Length: 252
Image 1 (spheres, rainbow, N blue to C red):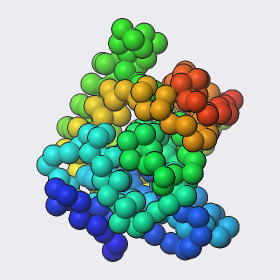
Image 2: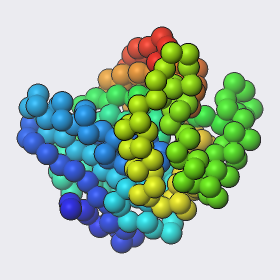
Image 3: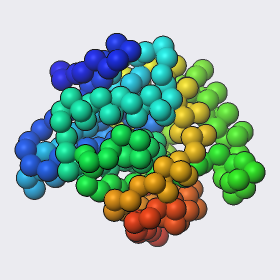
């Protein structure tokens, strides 16, 4: 296994294949680098260097008791990209990983990142508050916390139904994908997953988005039941060099 040890001693697992311009993939909650396998294989065949990590507390990375917050996730990425000496990189983030990408680029990525892609991202902020009145109410995240913290095996088995839109008319559950989602989730730390809910729901990426001048492509399905589509136009509007592509009927 390839790992680096970051400053607090936590080991971060990563995959690093190929040569050429690097593409760095950032996974969503509560998954792992394995969620990007198909995309990594595709871009590897196109001559890119492909890298994906397991966020701390997820997958094969260390299950640290602390640091399950967005700023620490991003600091871990900064250490990883420095250790691998990644330059002219393309960073692609899904869901929580989208928030991780934009904050990494804003805080640490100057001179290292060429462009980024945010897919179904939690940017600019998910939680409903006075500044985000059409956000997701806190009670929704409290229900996710309850299921994750105290009934995780069953909760993670059920969660992919809405995640992939299999509850829509005519949709067919793909059992292999469902079980692989569950496998990835159950590899991680229940404490990290529980605390990570605050990280993805309450982190405010408004200023990060405003400060990123490189090209950013925002992709979002209009039938996303996890991160509502209304996030995407807000993020694209805040970006100095952003472009939004919406996908009618697509899930998370």
